Picture 1 (tube, rainbow, N blue to C red):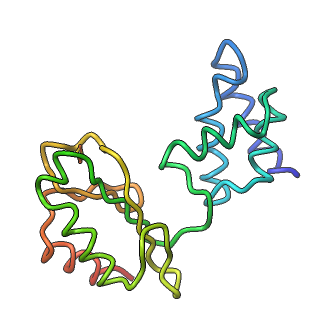
Picture 2: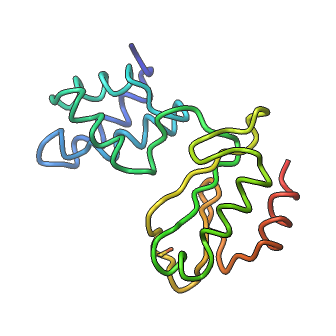
Length: 155
Ligand code: FES
């Protein structure tokens, strides 16, 4: 498996910043996800070999952090924070609303590939709860109405 010379150069530059290759794992996995859109077992094996560790260790990292996608997700990937502040400010209701609106459950993708939905732990925006991350952007102080407006306006 090969990601190409430009990708390998980016990985080499990342690895060079750390005292040992394994310490660059989060950043290298992020590069893989940027390149492929998700992290498949073949990529985990490639990262393990490149960083001198086992595929099991790489998979442990990928499966621990919700920022890493273990399967292809929708074009608009919604990550709903359901930790304490967001929960107290209605994240359960928000999640139920999204499931009903999109017709999918947690970890699922709409049949047209437009949306995917998942539950995540605190995203560090507790003062503006409830919130979710839509692709790379935070949306805060959400109401069911503001969520509908936002999602209805997406292509
Ligand atoms: S509890 Fe939701 S952002 Fe912190």
